Length: 108
Image (cartoon, rainbow, N blue to C red; front, side, top):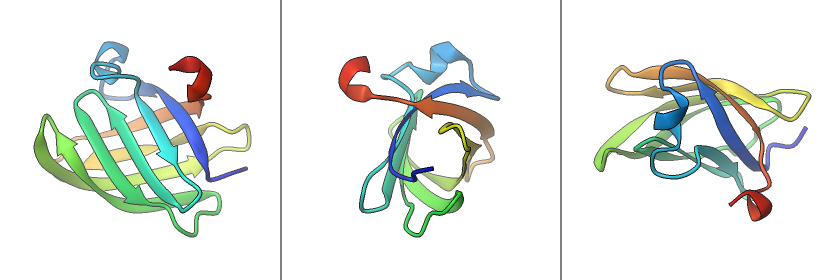
């Protein structure tokens, strides 16, 4: 189970698939330095994933429809390589998600 990689968000509890991919593929990326980012719909954010082992909870900052936004992201790294968790915006919106491993070099 690796905490580094790219995952395609395929399902969110609150928003439908058409919204998820509104501005490009909905995704979560965590790099080798432990820095993470996500985007779905008109929302994007960056978070620190340092010290990840099995799960993480982190604050994030970014944008929601071009307005500054922030919140919390929780991620569970499942044994099959998928991610489950929740993205919460400080304005009260929150949604559980499911993401699958994604090889962006062939899927983009």
